[in-house]
Length: 190
Image 1 (tube, rainbow, N blue to C red):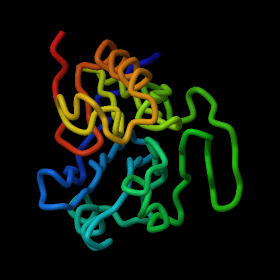
Image 2 (cartoon, rainbow, N blue to C red):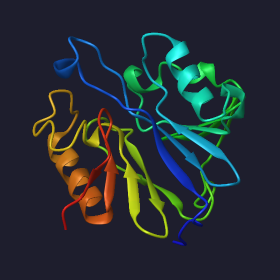
Image 3 (cartoon, one colour):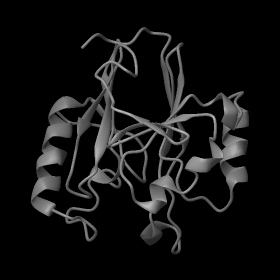
């Protein structure tokens, strides 16, 4: 797989959190990827209100209609709740592309050079992750394969813990950095 040009920017738009750390609130980590051709937002899930997302986008000089692709790591509501806020975007999930009521299969390379999808089941059967190959490092955005760095060891919501452990191992082998489902990006110790 080709690496992305240096002009590609990856930024945590909103850092996620889990209820154990926030007095019962949960929000996924939302990542913004700009590669010159398109602007991708991952997991626009639950927030106190949509203004939280709008304000974060405004800080980046964006409006919801300027998001080209919304990437969904898995189908749980805490990661998908605000998809409709991005009505002009194509949605990419486990099954493929959605544009309004039209579905298309995903084809390798659809996201451009340096960005690919791998299946990472275990937390849910429909788990997928983005591998983003930059000039300096390989970053994987993995949803709830990891909620946060080293947490949880045993996922209480996993559909298949054994499969989840396998997905975790694959991600740790491939990535230099991991963007987890509800926390800060972390560096993988090699």
